Length: 124
Image (cartoon, rainbow, N blue to C red; front, side, top):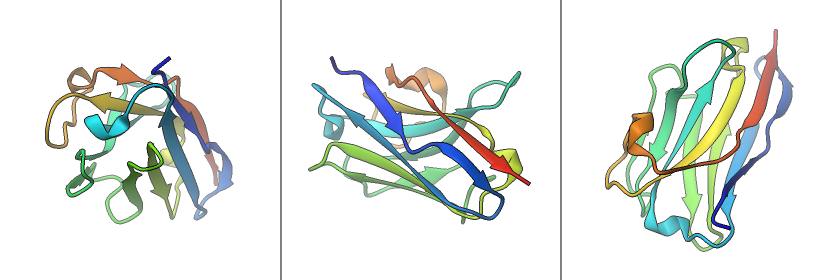
C-alpha cells in the first residue's frame, strides 16, 4: 500500500509520442513534489522532470526541455509525463518518485518513494 505505480511505457518510433502516468493507492500524491527520472542500461539514474505539490512550478532536464511536459491531477491522484518528439536516446526505464521536499528537487536523494519503473524504447 502506498506504492507508486507507473504505466504508459512501450515501443515507439523516433518522432513519436508517449504519455506516462504515475498513480498511488493509499498515498495522497498531492502531499508530495513529484519527479520523473530515467535510467538507461549501464548508466546512472538521471533527472527528467519535476513538479511542485500544486503544479505551479515545473523543472526539466535540458535534454528534454521543449519535448516533455510534466503535469499532475491531484483530484485523480495522478502525475503525467507527456513525451513528444521522442529520440532513440530517450530509451530507458522511467521512474516516478515522490518527495517530501518543497520545490522541484532534481537529485535522487531528495525523493522518498519510488515506483518500479516502466520501459520506454524508441526505435530509429
